[in-house]
Length: 335
Image 1 (cartoon, one colour):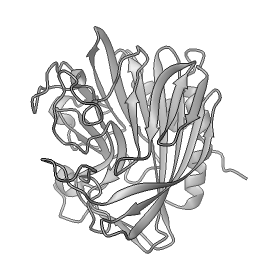
Image 2 (image 1 turned 90 degrees about the vertical axis):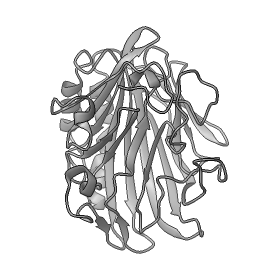
Image 3 (image 1 turned 60 degrees about the horizontal axis):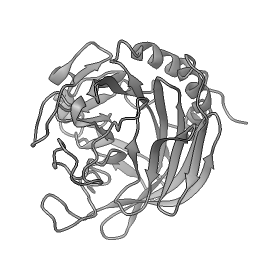
Image 4 (image 1 turned 120 degrees about the horizontal axis):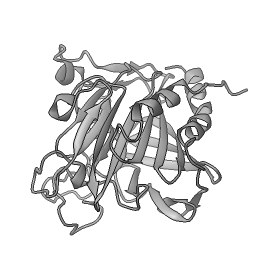
């Protein structure tokens, strides 16, 4: 995607956020900087924190939904939480990573090398936080670099996150632009990626790896549900279920301007859901390498997703209607 397209995506974020909270007055969003994170609150109530130190990638944790309940798995960031499985330590709440970037595995790397299932490896380091604006929506912009285990920079990225919410829904509009400013960059054909989230155990459809309390449902924009949603192309995927005796859900939207929209989904019964436009070999049984995408030297790739944390299931939350409003929001080119 061109830099012009990336600018168009970023310019439309504010409009999209306002459209998505049109059913109720939007809460005031406040961003507060700390040495290791940026806290996000809605009318003084916790929403999330953007954590950018101490890990192999920037993440969002915790994520508090509109009922006040946590929406993502807490392990390995918090220990001893009842019902949580201790598998896949690289599944850290909400993150962006990929398993083949110029041959380097950024997906599986984890800071606690030496423990079972953990290994050191490549990482994404924040270089600067350029914007942290509060208001009717909160806007966070950061600069980051992708570094191999040997210390070489593969590429850089810029991220723009827009936070919004009301009594029924909370949203994170997440745009990441990868810059091939250290030579060409290949995002390789693998299912291990990319824009990922690990749901609360109650939103899982099965108890796996020792987890307890699974009572969730998976559905996508094409009407596929459960295991049938894995690897399929869809505009959105939604996980819903009961947390603290209230039905809540998480939807992830793929933007029409994204590479290979509608994207494929690494949507698993144990709670991983990830938008991945690159893993065509395993998702679509295509020849190996079909999903490779090369960003030429000096070029860029912009990807935009919306995370919707909502009351009710996908139907009650009007997820398809919300996707349509978000996707159709006018994209205005900045002067």
